[in-house]
Length: 436
Image: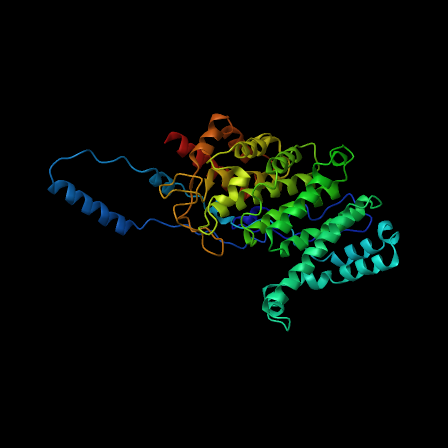
């Protein structure tokens, strides 16, 4: 769980194991953030600031009276609001535990659907499954090695990723087999959630996400009360990992006009209800946080600009989907009984009202952040952070400030330093923006 020790954006990894017959338990619903980013804030250079003020005063006294001085810029208000805890969360929450891969492969091989296949097809699938450990071991070094193999630079690199993409497609098809049991589908999704972390092609990610959403999230068979908890939570793990991988994909505008993001958001908000099991709520909350992190990262990237995110949230500072997410995560905030879900809800709100999308004066503009981009490592320095005035005012106008304040006194919050700091920072943001 993302507990008191996660002030710098880190959370403990998922270390639980899963037995082959424990289909109703999902040890990876609590996604480890793997966020080792530290909080870096920029302090004002008081010396240079003082010199500037001195020069301005001298100039004013030596010249004839003119128009009165301009009022302080909104940027000054932004500089007064320090949000080190919120700013420290700069990386997506990912589920990357690999210890269960051998068991997953074993269970898939022995499934009824595989056994019913013809021998040649079954052996082909076995060979693909046996290559999974090698695929999952690929990193930047191994990709570089393949990239420079005997087949030539481009051919070697293309072969590696083509095999990765075909493996994902195969597993998606296996998950849709009518003979597959819920537990077998869960094991398949456990593998897919890891493979999407390796994908560098946005179109492949979208194709995988759409298949998972249609079959395991918005399908009429998955909305019934008898939904298998582990399967539903693992499906959200796949989607959360996929949206978390978008920031590193080569296809920057792949989502444009293809993905119905409102269906994802609406489904995720529906999962946050206290009636759902905590594993599902945790995974859905992680998806919403990763989505907002992706949007902010794209908006502040000079290489991508607003075009990649217009398809997600539209060309506006606060779109209908922004409002959906804000209201969805804040509704029922004080009824939340799990500290991990509450933390992720607060992080999502924080990434909307305090974003990296500014025009240089601390105002969100929906078109990047005035030419300033985040460092390549993704860590916020504070220079590109600003207040989304409309979103912050919306939180106040809808009466959610009291709910945010009350969440500090919940039983699950009293010993959680991260929740305490996040609520304080969010209240400071919306209060300053509203009073301004």
